[in-house]
Length: 101
Image 1 (cartoon, rainbow, N blue to C red):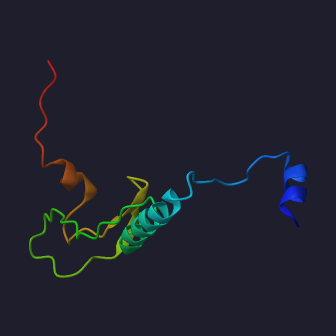
Image 2: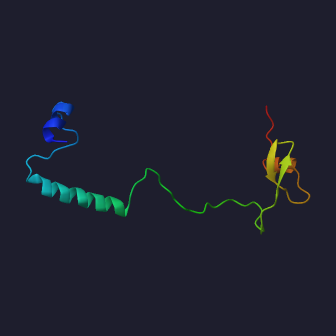
């Protein structure tokens, strides 16, 4: 397709971009290439990932392995199996109750 035919079909609009004067084209290509190389070394895809192991408070300092989860009807959810001789109500006895006056 000739330039004249394209101009007639596109209504003389330039589709894309043009660099004027043409002497600036070489420097612009160099700069765009440099920016592309810098970006490709460390691209930003809009997400950030951090791989850090979160520490957790362990009330049972002698814990060697995870205890299997069990469903607790009182709480209505799955919890780690409690050590022998402990109940859910024992967990709430850690904080002493204050009398309401």
